[in-house]
Length: 68
Image (cartoon, rainbow, N blue to C red; front, top):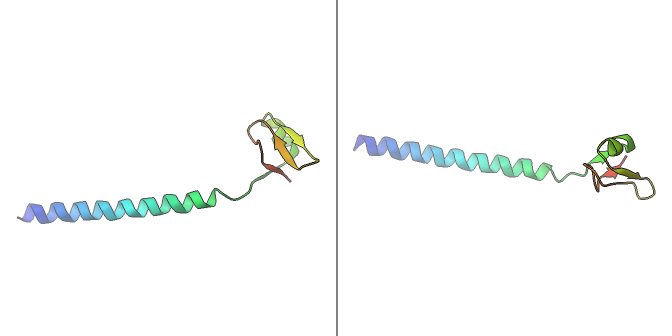
């Protein structure tokens, strides 16, 4: 009987900890949506081409990011 209570408490604690982790993951995923800016040299170093007419990096690691 005592083991069942302890086991239930452990399972409940693990479930609540899991909810806390998913909340933290959601919060960090929301911050990733912020726009990022790269310099023309960072764009070129990443293998892209700086399109200064549209202020965008074309191709490479920073493809589609705005140029600052």
